[in-house]
Length: 228
Image 1: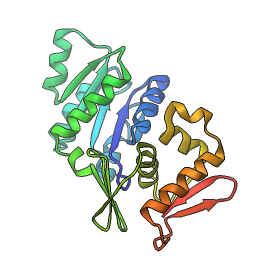
Image 2: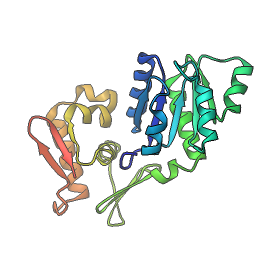
Image 3: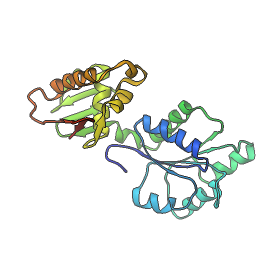
Image 4: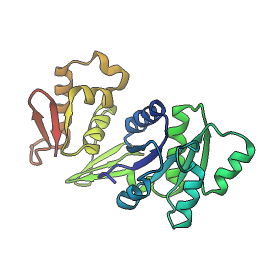
């Protein structure tokens, strides 16, 4: 599992649907590993220990619910949400009997999918562990939208909080200004120029590291910033 990020496995044989799911989950800050079949999934979850799986039932090779039933037999208790066009009562019963924790029928609403994932992660006790991010002198309480420097609270605007959250999820990675606009500003980012991004980063730096003792922010020429 990537540092500070909840990792989700998605098994979906239709590439366009897989890409759609990956897009929405990554936008929410999850790390996503996508597979077009059950091949190599068991090896992956053994090595990476992801937090949750989204599984289509109509898969090539081994059918999705049969694969989940197999994983339960060999001892994996990873939470599973079936995401499938099989919507008959008997099919829903099969999914839950195979070891599924939730069941979403296609076509699906991406927002509902995200909310159901969050609910299942909470029930599993996984999300609570991830709601506080810590790095050096910084602590972020995601659910309460509070930031602490050496345990002292720091007041940030919503934009600054989103910006810091983006950096904290991507420590030691070069982030483009386009990426920062998309993650921190969202739809409003289309009208934000590079200078505005620089100003926002500087304001954030002055609040969380006014003396530049930690030297968190590093400009990457022609790209954007790296946070470490």
